[in-house]
Image 1 (cartoon, rainbow, N blue to C red):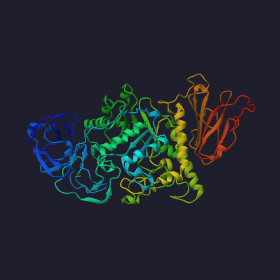
Image 2: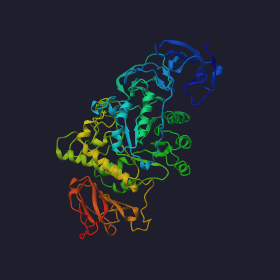
Image 3: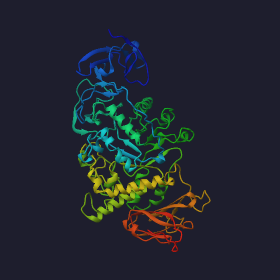
Image 4: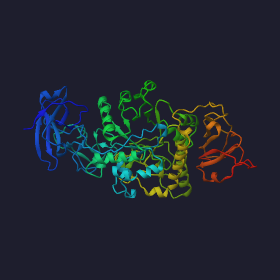
Length: 615
């Protein structure tokens, strides 16, 4: 006979201990327990009731000996209903993506040893980070990805070299914890332990592709794994990222009424068991103060969309470092409006490009999973969400986009060239900003979702990256790589604080300064669409000047006079003709419309009597 004992250990996940397997169920019913199955055959082998002596509050905990965790699966019962374990660390394998789930799922125990070797968290600062947001399935599902294990964690591993070469330092995953992607008609869904006494009716063809819903928060998503062991494959992915000095950040969605203490336990679990480096926490009532004060999570990046969730005053004296991050649309829409030549955007844009609080990070982006991709931002004036099945009512109507002259795909060369130029302008503004840059998968080579700005339910080539665009639009990824290198080479662009607008080193130049057609004076009138930003390093011996003209007409911008023995030189420009123009010593430059040009000072070679730098 199996010996049954009682044991309470946190976190409240089912796990194997020295005394047996410890089961935990949170339930108010008195008639409840656990049913065990042989993992290979699926045959029921035991039904073990919970006793009143196993209960504290609404929590039942029981340790059962005589069984091996690797050989069983299990499911709970209560009040005549079967219940999936909401804290399952794994589910019974075999379910294909998008297959209907109308009954509670059996759970398995994933606590086998994993050889992490000498794995360590990279612990990169926000100012040294470059985020790449992706959907595990959509990233490599297309045959054009060229990977063996399409749409999986292993597929990401195959693309790590590509991401590293792009300059990415942190991969952010859309929900990769287990969730049921098939949608059921209104009622109780078979997820997160909710009981069902009869099969549920699935809505044909309706998916939750993104996964922003309740789920099995302790388990990696099984259908994103190429092997039967999703836990091991996920760990392989994290370990391989860490080998390249790259971090992994996971998105988690929590409903407003989700227990705060449980959020903390979930994050601790992923840090300890999966070596995750950060979390993007989504939901209205995320307990950021609780999380930011936890010693185990100190140094783990914690991103949140809602400023109201963050106690900024307490962060000033936390003493635990700058690991809280704010992830909002504050940067996206004003800079999009500047990009499309809207009036009255200069003042806000300059403030956002400089914004970089000392006590928390700020994530800057032009696009993420919701809204237009970068290519769609310059290809569509309005959303095209018909495929979502909601008669175009879903998705935001406010995209601040411009199609450059024609809606959707075009064969007109001038429009195609302008679109690529506008994307390069967006790259330039993003990388010149003081906050942490983020791009959505495929934005580095012009990926399009055909104007769909809310493809939450689409699992098709619309949401799968078409890697053929990488070759077709290689000039985009090449230009982005150049800008990433520029940012890496110049500490002034990633200072970890807001730059001073005064001369703090007594070198004759402020750390950061604004300019227009007159040096050190910026025009913020409603009709203004151009400005210059100068950055000063090495006590004035290294100056950088970003000339931004988002209007459609040429504009003259004034450059301050560099130190004696130095001259200005164009190093990057989104206008290819600018790179062919000769350098002059005049300190007023004509910047073409819809162009970002970056000048840097270079030393005039000794013996150069002209005082000009040769190309």
